[in-house]
Length: 133
Image (tube, rainbow, N blue to C red; front, side, top):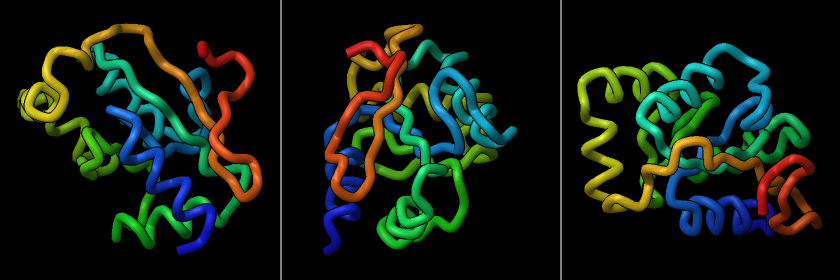
């Protein structure tokens, strides 16, 4: 397993809710990424975002791990939930809230607690500027 794939896997396993998106938690650079984040925000979920744009290898390694070809990808408790359409649909039916409760208990509900981390070869796991530590 490559160093980058290991870092992605560690992020998926260690972050309660993580969204691999195009952009940051402050500024999504595509409509689908924004819709996925909006669905999480509507429930008051805290989350960590990972920007896949700085390095094309991030997207490649992520898709190899998840077997999901598109971005965004949202994981809850280490499990892939889906992309924008799936996350929105699950939020609308109440299933996303149930999944968050099942996987994380009540600890996930912290509105506004959002950050972006970088995952790339040689960079390790680091917070991006503007992200609360």
